[in-house]
Image 1 (cartoon, rainbow, N blue to C red):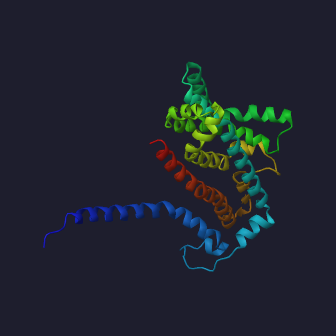
Image 2 (tube, one colour):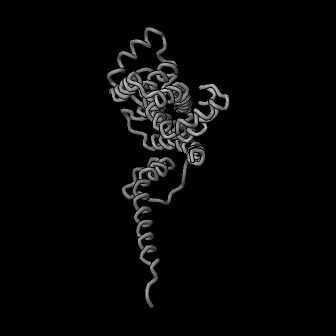
Image 3 (tube, one colour):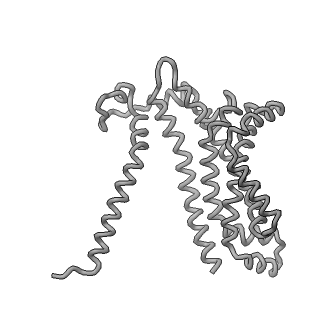
Length: 280
């Protein structure tokens, strides 16, 4: 019996699926190990032959977020990353729109300056920012790391959102203004809804960039405003390394980013679909 033409395609699809699942498992293995370690006691963590069968315990989470006050660091990370993302979008989105619609020599110069600021090593600004915020009395406050994080998140937002605005035909703006909208009204009522997919993607990256930042957090925060990446080294002590608690903090550190990404991803997909249909 001759094989149907669909058989080779099905085999190729099956091979691609198997390879994809294998690569995905390899990529997820470190995170799976992290999650399992967070529920193990110290003896189970240091077994010569790690076992997948063990009695889960929440002691690592209780000690880290209860006795060692990592809950405060979690709150600090959430506040700083959220404020940074919101401010980057508030200031970066209108700037990106104006640079996308006004293609002038001065606009291109501004883009080059923003790119230069984005490519500038963070360590170069660490000491000047510390001196500036120390003189302003902002060390150990939320505003110091938020402003510092904007030095790389704001240029990133402008460049990324400018690409999304360039993909939206300017005729949409013009049609809205013909219908009676002001330039600002055309931006907020017609262009911005079409670009909400880009805003969602930009928000994800800006949030992650701020959430994982370590250098500025180490230099500009204090005991009351330290973020999770800054606080984790406290678990590396002269008497030993608390691997279970480090794993527990690591798991909790990834959860807000995962939840935020999944929530915004729905808006990102729907926004891109709506933009594509509206531009047809």
